[in-house]
Length: 292
Image (cartoon, rainbow, N blue to C red; front, top):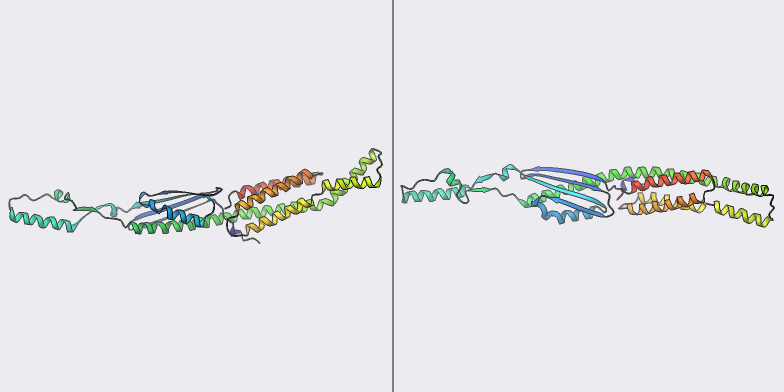
């Protein structure tokens, strides 16, 4: 039986978040079906230079899909609040003491005036390297979760496709079992028409007519090709790596054979089977549009 975990959907969502002393990071990745890999990024201003690295991470892990990635960052309040530079304040205090010794009558500055002196108040600087490293690790975690989600969804798609492959095989077997009856019925109908028309054919001509009828009703080749395509679809489902495009091509081939089977149908039973085949193939094709 095929390993259904080898099938990955292109539709998935992942979200990760991390709270750290420097602030909070949040990553969201969502993907939908697309013919090629089409990544889009929305990054916090301070993390924009991470985009090439994140884009490469996507390219090495995903093959197809429209992928939207957002990376948000909110600095912790403690990091944004200004702090007193004690060293700078001491320098000013020493300078004021020296001035007071020289000019005892000089007025002392107010607290607000001291705080307004250059360098007394400063904003704590964030460690950008640490933030970027944490953001990259969080993105990798979200990407892993996205791939796991795509695998879970892909497994469900593969199960649905496998169920329909079984149903198609049953329809093919039904038509194959009907072939002897169909040919015999066609032969009887030809002889009946000749009897009604009171026409007698020489044995060679009659044999030629019967061969022609048999050829028109013979769908052995179509059934063989349908069986081969069914086996190839099952084989592809078990293979590693992207397979959506190949499966889509196989759906076209299956549909082609079903149409030929329908056009060659000479009895209602095979017509019904051909219609059912096309319904099942279309159901598979719709699911395969989401497979990577």
